Amino acid sequence: MIAMDYREFVGGVKSYERDSWFGDHVYLDTLRETKKAKLSGRITGEFADQVLKMYLIQWGQMARTVNRKKNAIDWGAFALRIQQAVEITSNLADVSFINVDFNDATIKKMVLDSYQALVVSNVGPTAISKILHLIRPRFFVMWDDKIRDDVGSSKSFTGSKYGYLDYLGWAQAEVKEFLTAKGIKRDNEVGPKLAKELGLDKKITDELARKTLAKLTDEYMWWKANRRP
Image (cartoon, rainbow, N blue to C red; front, side):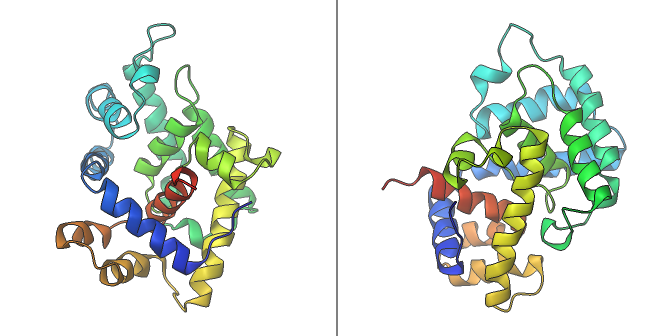
């Protein structure tokens, strides 16, 4: 398995931000639209079809999957499942993944049940994590096949709800270790701290300062899994 340290974390986030800041506008716009949809009290089929689908295609690069005609996604029905996941995780509305016990039965149930709610044809583990992150951006860390392969071959990280639960616990332990070493006590300190340290263009750092630790962890993991030797 890979191991995180703060210096490499900063370097990975900097590389990601420098190369992907423009594409991340789609992510940030979708995050805002998801927040509006949640505040309205209902995730609609229109939101799922017009906003979420475009997010998965444009930012998640999943056009071939979400447009598949065989067992095509019914976005209206899928919206109901997303709403179910919102309700299951209502107690996580402002909770960071760094501050929970993933061995706690209640936390386990919320993760497993919300993940299971989104299991339908043509929506795989990567897309599920991206949708869960939109619902609870401080709690759910995104992943994909390359990240799972880079983390290691442990069976606990297979693309399933149980593998995802274990991945969240692993990511928490790794991040906590270097945050403690740097004396960072709160997850929402990380984005502003990096924005000051990285020396990137202001249009990048303004957005970086508002990103959650869960998103920044994904940026580091994505960079780590995709960088050239």
